[in-house]
Length: 63
Image (cartoon, rainbow, N blue to C red; front, side, top):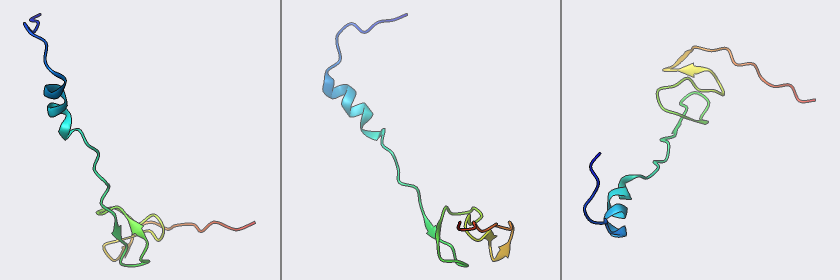
């Protein structure tokens, strides 16, 4: 396996890693219940997607 002839500087490696960053998830408001959700997914709080009820969400009982 080939090896580098000379050592790479710290700056060279760090320049390469500048694009290794996390991106914040895009959060949108549900048009039905106005809670935050991920885009193009069923709302976990009300079960609606694109104006239609897709899931029946059970509500938690307080003890």
